[in-house]
Image (cartoon, rainbow, N blue to C red; front, top):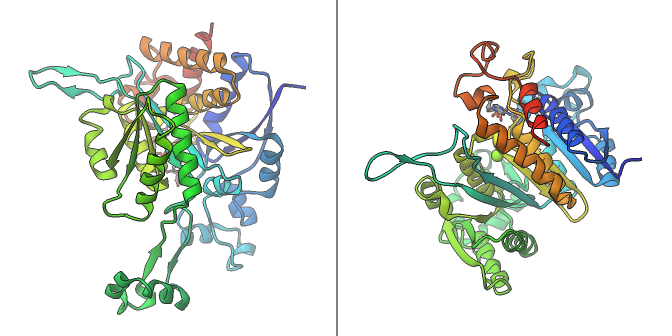
Length: 395
Ligand code: NAI
Ligand code: MG
């Protein structure tokens, strides 16, 4: 029997393309694991009315480690129309199974590293004052609270009277009192002190372990005084145990401007669910975009590793496949880090760095050409060729 069992959840679209590529790399680096397949996503939704089967939850509960590809999500109404006819109008409501997974196992700490690989033609460059260009080194890890905030799912259109009554206890609700319930949509932003503490502590621990000089809380406490305010307050308390690390605070809007001005100044960033999602995509854009954006969702017992890109349905049927497997492979490397297979994680990242630097084997995104059936004839490598090149460098 292998040392580890990993639950493999390819999901939909290109999730089914990139996940097996990551497994090939894990095998090649000598990671001793068996993989059990688990279903998640659109097929399960249209056939069973539930995109996250109990069997998948059971497997994760048992084996603790998961690799996830991507799923296809659609708005509520559209999703309902695609249910198989027998299930329609039976009260099934679509929800995102990856958000469901994070909540089911309290995978509340999301880590999204955004590091530039030297030689990546997609790296951010900046014009110098005196002419010419420079390429700042980006080395950021975003810690995103993964279960609460605006993504907790506590929301209404046409809210029940009790909700209106509760809101009416707040003086600011006066401005909305005249609005008919049918014309009122409310999404709540719930923060808890415990979850704030867990994400902030995880960020500081990471900064200390990896020798980063600062942790930046990226919220909006001047406006969102209660929720962002709580995150800031907790950060100040936790900081007392980490005197060697500076605590910075930025507002999400200003951060989005500064990150193209001086991205090299930031290291660990911590934010609530929505702002963490935004700021991590923005930093990912400086280091190669979706083809390079990896992530970990970590709870006390279970951890799931996934690229942050979606299922890219327009590419799923292309044969040979053309999408970049690096985000998925980097996510698998994060899994190796998580279980202290640090040397193997480093070997995988070094191999990726070497392939990127050499620049001979590049998927279409790294060539800045449109993706499509003819990108191969324009010189782009296939998904498989990129993985093969990475495996060849594992040494
Ligand atoms: P997407 O991430 O699937 O694709 C956006 C564009 O990015 C693609 O058209 C493609 O040009 C590019 N891209 C994405 N991954 C790439 C890769 N590995 N290599 C090269 N290029 C890549 O986002 P989109 O189109 O907004 O959503 C498609 C579906 O995915 C939707 O149903 C959406 O709900 C879902 N989605 C799922 C996520 C998840 O499973 N965690 C995250 C984001 C979207
Ligand atoms: Mg996102």
